[in-house]
Length: 404
Image (cartoon, rainbow, N blue to C red; front, side, top):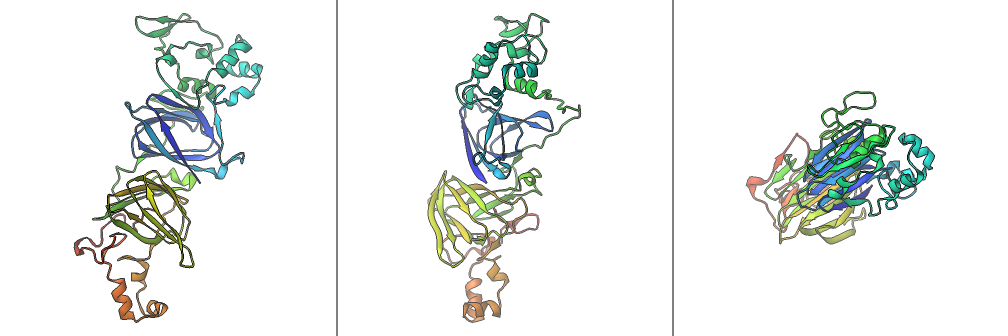
């Protein structure tokens, strides 16, 4: 798995492309319209902060920052298990020009003219079309886009229309059939023409004419926490909650710790964890199998951390304020983590003469040590006992809570 970060200024477009890897997008800040090919139809979804959506490897997609003057921030997992091996993962730009270079430029002019059904197009016009974009994979969308009336607005009709500008209404009228265009040359229409897919927002249909229903985004912030107490909360999303996750076999989690709280030492038995600190600061501790410290570091907003499967670890929020972190796991199945310390821990469950003998102490001493912590999962760091009234927290769906 790789982790990607996408930042887009207001009124910008991430040009149409496809990857040799699957994506799971998480909107950290802002709003975005994502369009992609799903079952041979073009679908578009409007995403807000907290939304998650999955895009298959090989599915052409684009993004438009629709936030009102707001910078867009997206965190994504990149599942490179299907990668062709040219690099960790590879983007193939459908839209583009000289930078980024469109994959269409690799075909000769005669092939493209036949494919586009525009036999009257000269080689010079063709290369003007394919070489016009030089500003990178993220470009601004403004009135200049609507003012362009190139020959490719009529790709697929087998002719080249002449269009004139109606300045009084700021729209275009086709001289061939007086069709109102409303200045709507867009990447969406060009993509439809290239791939031969539907663009009707109200009736998405694939090439066989069958309606297509794409999965809706899933919002983490609209969901009740799986576990909550006075010291924080956790959310874990798996394939049972959001079916598209099973395609990449990746899970998603979100954790919020209050100031000075700790997610108690625990183990992920089914998955490796990749996390990003969204806000605040704190500390992460990881332990090797031999009991030595593998990592004990301070983390702050923007830091990314990696926790291998089976290694014990914990996260601690700083006393100066809460810490929130988000991430992905390498399994879409329910992880069922093993908490090592706390009211719902392995030590509490296995409490008995065998465990006491393993530590070389009496069972009474062990019982006093293990039962001193009345809180579970998330505890107030640096205090010996929690408040009796909030020791169990809130559990959902009759499963052990975990962010992982």
